[in-house]
Image (cartoon, rainbow, N blue to C red; front, side):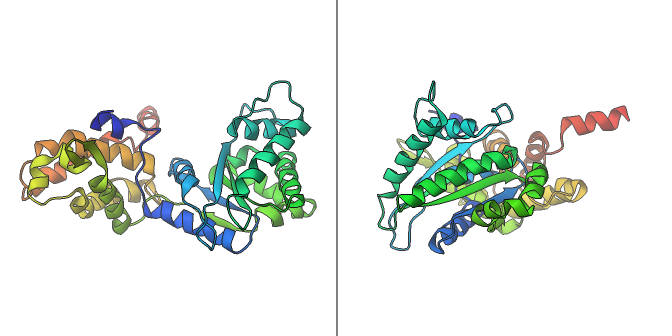
Length: 316
């Protein structure tokens, strides 16, 4: 894969971020405290899914032993039944679901999660459920059943639900009803908000991820050196541009649009444009005017302000 393809692979490209590290610390704290579940909630397109998927080989118990993390997600077109939940999880665990009853699917899931938990002395395993706002209360009972069956086998399963806060209202109201207290206390007593980039310091750390990202092995080169060799040889790094980058993002987009944080999808698009298309034309680290122009053009190309909004404004 070429260096450009590596950065442009939207489904595969990922760099460590302060937000992802905070997420890891919070979920690990829940596990160490013996909690049975939790909710991660945030706006759309902030990077929640990639952050939780990155946990696959990162979580450990108090003794430093690895804890297996399994990921599944839900969709609008999925059938609203308990069996549909079991089938979705079973597929994520690489089981065939055709002609399988709910009981058989449940048994397969419990066996797979239970076996994974035996890899550590605390018999812990984590199941992450993305797009949880699309689930119904009845379907949450399926997760309670999985949890109960694992408890009977002396397996400690932590189920983490990840939800889009803009669509979570209905499920939240249902969970607050008294008859659903058992679900609320088992899986939703703990929650944490997930944010995008909220400060210049966080932006600088994310830009540093590009400075550390190896895109070539022969010779070994990071993304910044590969695309901006002249600037790199002068000691410049992408993280150096954080102050002007953050200022223009705030003044041109965050403040006028009322954005509370900069989502990773938009940040990645803007930064890829900046690094691959605009900054390569700047050869002098002292040329602040050209660098600032590169930042402005990259932000314009990232689609932070939706074309639909501009169209609606023109029509009105």
